[in-house]
Amino acid sequence: MDLELNVRQVGDYTVVEIGGEIDVYTAPRLREKLIELVSEGSYHLIVDLERVDFLDSTGLGVLVGGRKRVKPHEGSLQLVCTQEKILKIFRITGLDQVFSIRASVEDAAGTAR
Amino acid sequence: VTGAVDVHDRRAGAAGVAVRLELAPEPQLLGTLRLVVATAGRRYGLDEEAVQDLKVAVSEACAMSISVLRRAGLTTPVEVCMLERDDRLGVEVRDRAPGPRHAADGSGDLLPEHEFGLALVESLATEVRSGRDADGTYATTFWLDRS
Image 1: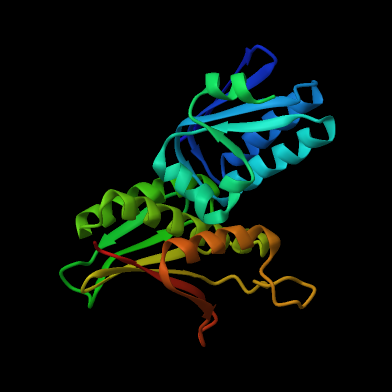
Image 2: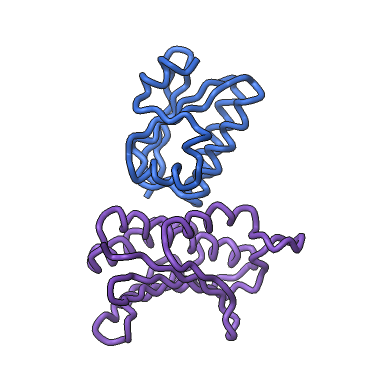
């Protein structure tokens, strides 16, 4: 089990593509990546969860933390996810009402502002 | 058991205990644990949605145990028992960490990092119970229905 993180630019948006499992062991790497991106001036983030196999409460906490970090910069943190098993985690915690969850990176990049 | 998941399949013998695991308190072992419990859940007859619920609930409960064991500086294992009952699959997660499970301010709230995890377990499973037994172990139990 490992966490794969790839970063690319789509227009004004920085896309973080995640593969693998996000849990208490791997989530710190994602947290560090988000902190690094914000400290470098990337304030409009799209986190692509389409290749995530597992997400736990630590991962949710990291995403909430990322959202808090971009907010003071009038930034945004959107999610891309169509996987029911991952969407369910957001629904039962109520975080589907907190995050903008899009069906594709293109959708997120085209409608975020 | 250190750095490994030890599986004893006791389906044929023990009363209702299908699988018993001992997990060293190492977060990197949670992925292996999830593979094992998912396999056991499928064998029991859970559908894929319930298997996912099982993985999340067990992983969260074990992550909480690992957290308190490591905070206490202990290397004693987390014990996971999967219990078969008619149309339900039960999970019991035990550890021997003596530390607090509640906020130090006496509010009775869970430690902040555990709140989300327990909320997930309570949402995905039924009859979630947790508390310390007379022998000092702290146990969290919950059930998933076989659809």
